[in-house]
Figure (cartoon, rainbow, N blue to C red):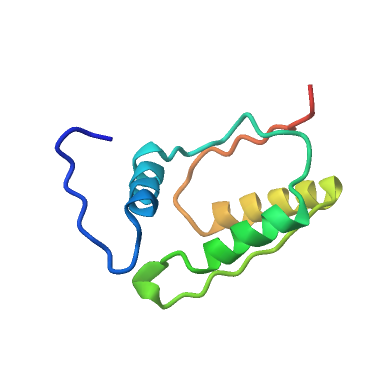
Length: 103
């Protein structure tokens, strides 16, 4: 833990869980590479999606919606569509697409 960090008490949470939450927030990273080639199990994916559904959104007014695409070709086509649509509706930016293949 960070020396001198003040952790406000959250009603009903044990100390160990509070420390875990603060550690997850402090150590979080935006991961864009290094993914494993194996797909997540349905059990793990279900837990992640359940947690993500409870994550805050803009003003807590916009519900999260997720689409699970397991087929590689469908992912590729979806990415191209998304990048093209985003490019038409946003400021000019460069988009780099690369193919992730297992080593």
